[in-house]
Length: 629
Image (tube, one colour):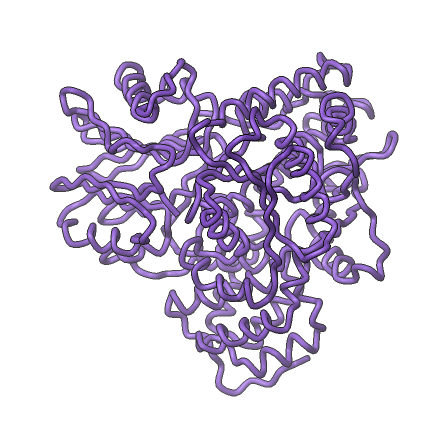
């Protein structure tokens, strides 16, 4: 993946080349600045910011370097040097009025920006409002930052000490919460943040420039008709902002409503083709192919299988530091081979516009549609059979911290109780509940699926129309019932994009209740995971919440594929972390489907845990252990 990196400190001339070497990929361009006590630079695909970076002011006092994409407020010409004009505008804004002026210039984007202020001896790091492209940092004798955790570990004197809470959260929900990573003292820059580091003292200050606080939605946009017109116009504007006529685009078609809406709103079908993954003949692929025909663009698809995915796991781990979404890396390679430079993704559309996270019936309370956390139902027992007592103790000792992290993430629910007491009345309480749960769901998805883009950006750049700032802010003003009840989404298709509404697909539009026998795992996870969280939320809200589940047409089939499972055992066995025979016996005793909820998250998180414990040098293999099936 492309991104920013750097070191501030003393005697860094040996550390800097080592960090850069760890980030080297044949398809990436490298640019850097080397000073006595500061080195910084970036790797890039050379698509969005083709101009040479860093860009300096005339006096040589300030420099700027940027990764990702952004659209600025001022009109920028469509010249070949558009990226240079954008950087120049942002640098001038910073020089004149500081970071507040700079961030106000940006209309939308997914980015990380570095500004070097030579006069004050500071470096300033700024990310986008949703923090979509991860940027990690380490505060020690040196200040080190990078888009890749593993590269930071290459710097001298940085110990590979595990964040036990982060590792346990990986096993619990699939990724660390908040600004945690899997490494003690390596943190992730929070969304909408400005980090300032003084080069001499290495003192760090972090400030938020935007707060997406849960507040009751405005009721001024009362009618569906008004919302449909404005939603359509604002979303089409978002797509126009991201359209560059000279670039080749690939639209990622899942068959759901998000990608269909992009297909309808995209300003031109020239220089675009579509791409899907899934089993041949699956519902998703059939719908995606039909959408591509309606739009008049070519369609390509990848049939996922165990052997295909297994081959990408090591590279995914190296790029992402996690094993979520290995299909993204596989697909990105094929998109590039087909000529794509930029991929268009419907990320978060189902939550922001469609209210995927909540379902309502009449006057009943919102129901949780999807799992709040994709948990590994049996991972605790699994690990206790194969990790040393010391390792287990480290994890178990942090269980309370994990609970605190989870409770911090649902702080909006806790704030809701006070708001309810002030507002009073059933309708006000219901509306506040829906709003709080809605934003909570968006927050969780933002945390988890930003890793999608990391894998994709290893080969092609990626843009997200649904998180255009104007469109996102508009959706936050729509009455909750219109979003959560799916009225707005359905009416947008009915009134504006009727050609694309030929089949309502449950993944992105209609909640689907599954008979218990069809998804016993969901029932099991529901009891194991939801009990504590749901009780806590229900206690705060004094209301009952009922979880319901989703089915996905193609994803978790490959994770149960024999070839993939064999590759999994091979990797685990090779890591010397877990005994293959005992591991296999234990999982098979639980049933092969038990570790295969949608997205294959449990098995991949488990394997990620094994690889990280190896990377961190933890002693993990027990010598004499009996498997308790």
